[in-house]
Image (cartoon, rainbow, N blue to C red; front, side, top):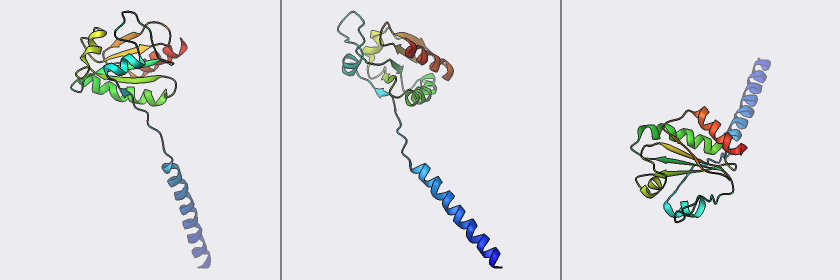
Length: 149
């Protein structure tokens, strides 16, 4: 009987230790990085001056801009992929979003007539666009390509 009680007590002690470790792991704060919602002023400040006719990127690292609208189904499907990539590439690539209904001037600047559109901006060189819904693999390939330039 004493052995059974000791075994039972040991089981609870081990369970309590295991539970404490689990709680500690879940208490760790994970910083979630989300793409920054961009307006015209911010675009001119961080990306390129909209008043000039030449492309001169102002950023220090590559960037991805997601042009979307809240009513667009493919945009809503792409959004979690972009959010996930923003976390995976945090500190290496800057991620922005542009709601074309709120900032139509930016959509017009790039001649965007259909969404979603992703604009991939290398530190040096011209931006490249991707129109329509793309896969997670393709998104990562395009971002990796930005980083290799």
